[in-house]
Image 1 (cartoon, helix red, strand yellow):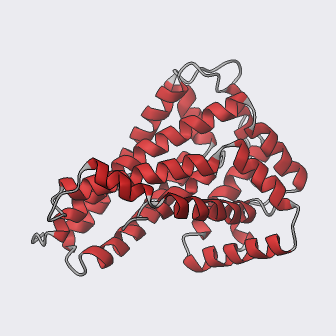
Image 2 (cartoon, helix red, strand yellow):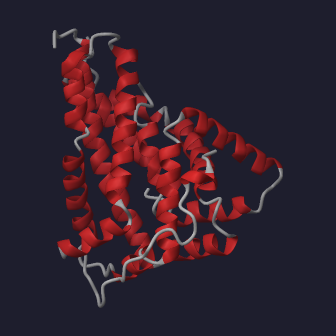
Length: 299
């Protein structure tokens, strides 16, 4: 229960990596993505059309689909852990409501537009609709889908251990990408916030015989920081090594350089803000719904 949001947050290492060992057949081959012609001129993200164009460029619908699939799978394990056999039809309805794709997309875009207001999105759209950018997005999403399989994740971590053992120079590029996007810190902060939201949902739903104060819950959540940080870094390295394996060093270096630009860093921060809001809401709602099942309501 304490690390309930850990798996769901991990995709935030992709697409600036937010934000993903699979068979290469799942990965988009070079040139497979046909990049649309980027819009001309400056497009400020205060313009909803610009945000929608950017969302399409990064394949937001596919990203949210993976998120919802991970969430539904996790919810099933949550039932086994907290209220075995008592979920019933209502629990399934709660899960469908919490992870409704249209609702997730609408809330995400609203927050993203607010965070990106006044920003020139043209450099971002140009990159992500280029052959290299489109290929990178395809590789990230394919890897995230593959990692839905726990055996694939285990193989990816084993491959990472082998890369470390032979001091593979590709790891330096992967670490440079992680540092450029401050991905460990963003993910750790988001995981802690989401765990806190989950606890609040449990408490407000009446799951605890003796309700915990915010201070008590925060103290418990902070005890998880070191473990989350260690797991987050290892997961990011293994995921990115998997996702970017088909890329040449030059292509990956170009992506690292792009991720260091002001536009990319602004977009990265905006993406994490949108994902944080989404996961905090999901986590609280999951906590409330789980609390109802834990109380043994006949649903």
